[in-house]
Amino acid sequence: MGAESGFGRMVFLGSLAYSSTSTGPVMGPSKVSAFVPCLPEVRINEMATSSIPLRAKKATKKKKSGSNKKNKYASTSGFGGAATAPCPCGSDLGYAKCCGKLHKDPGAFADATAEQVVRARYSAYAKREVDFIVMSTHPLNKNFVTDIEHWKESIRVNCYDNFELTSCEIVDETYEGEGDDERAKVKFVAKMTQVDSREKTSFMETSTFERAGKHIANGAWLYKEGVIETAPGMPEPEEEEEGEDSTGETTT
Image 1 (spheres, rainbow, N blue to C red):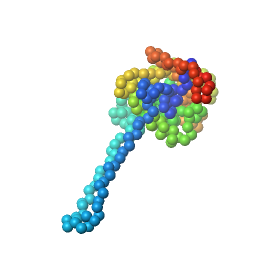
Image 2: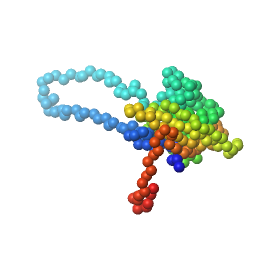
Image 3: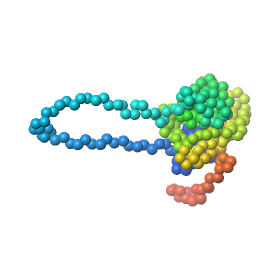
Image 4: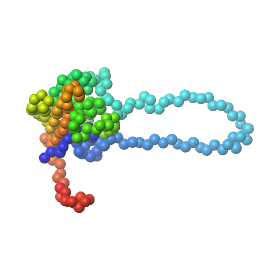
């Protein structure tokens, strides 16, 4: 039986439950502590008795450090080259004409099929479109966080920085029910490449989408839940051995 969640759990980390040292999503960038070297102590008495005349040092303007540095957690969709680049979902269209439309245009998102929303969520992780990831998650998703700003920051920190998201291959798309009870299921294979090792990995997921009414995202398809399976060509995960947990209960 497949593990639960996919691009739904990517709301926090992602659907992959792999470690940051192997083929799974990183747990967020490490923080490098900055430090300021201490200045040498000034002996006041020596300065007072010195015969050397003291002159006021001309003030110099210091450049603001980091003011021009790019925010590593910022969206990378933008305009120009970034917008005309191939869409991360793997379609033959440019980003601006594919998933970028859903990211930037609420009307396009509302009119999109469930398959298009899956592709757009995949591309949102590649482009750091955090607002879209949150906006396209159903409020009844078990991982939905009511503190939206804290949730967004968690996504920014835990995005796939060490991976290139290269293709979202749609396997199947089905719809059932009518009206407010309509439900969509999309099976897809998400592919990615580890930046340093260039190791390729992927997972397969069946995502369930439902609408939450016209008052939420204009009635767009929203990610409700997902079940992960091993993608074709990928090794099956090792089964955990039966043993006892810290409470003494038998586990599998």
